[in-house]
Length: 125
Image (cartoon, rainbow, N blue to C red; front, side):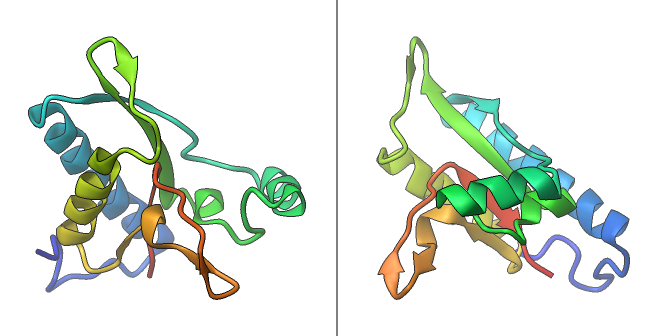
């Protein structure tokens, strides 16, 4: 269900605006599904991205640096959901449904092997 099929963003700020809209839709969906979440890292400096890449926790050209990625921690009332929880997969599927450019970290592959980052949601352009 591409939200903006006929008028795709042409500038980074337009892309960021569409990303923010999709995040809003995801947050509503999470809430309506009986979960809640906390917002993790949305913006990452290029310097921090380089540190994470060196530590094997991320990549240098992270979309967090362009404000096109966010990490979310899911909760059921009273407890955090582990990143392996199936709820992340369900919300990842919903995220990808919102726009064909949305990618979910649970689908990541690195060096030909699964490299899941289930709490990560991003938009590619």
